[in-house]
Image (cartoon, rainbow, N blue to C red):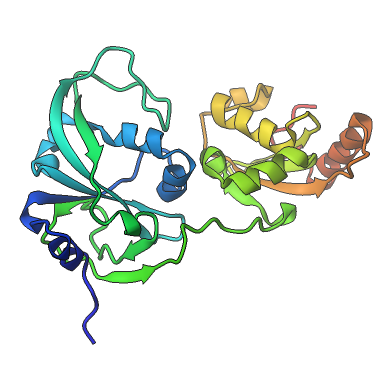
Length: 274
């Protein structure tokens, strides 16, 4: 049986595929673009409106069909847009997703407005982008078989504190429900450097729990720690070693942290300085 194709949906909605660009967005530093879209669609669309001058050929058609991959590699349809080149950027503008400075010499802005066609499929439709994932900009006539249509825009269930294993770059894109759990949780966590394989044991005992501590690392790159400051920036993997009880005092959480430093020898063979 022949699979339904995305270009068929374009035709059935009254659009000419030759006038459509297919754009599979992969923002630099964003591990899960689909989660970033779900977290803040407005910021994702603001990111989409700024593109490199050298890649203008990708955006030559007046309609954009935007897609975003998730952590599992599935490619989700996230919207149809009317798009038109607007002009250069101003100095000091920042990427709303990564907070990095845009370069006005190499980037330009497009005016994008949502189209109503296929709105029922936004965030629910999964396509097979094909083997050429590096070719993130393609013509609307390209074949994109439809693999799945979810009943709702899914938000994965919280897996439990001890099952959390995430790169710091993904922390700000976690589902809202996960964030609430992480705000409430306090205890001991582990950072692992993917380059040097060194470990850092830390504690979260503040009002925003694990979430607040990890966001600080994601924002600053080092969380104020001496040995982390001395290293090149890295996308540390973070996980939770032990969760403190709701009545645990800061001193008790400190004691938990000290035990884990001894167990993992993170002072002698890791990144802990004390």
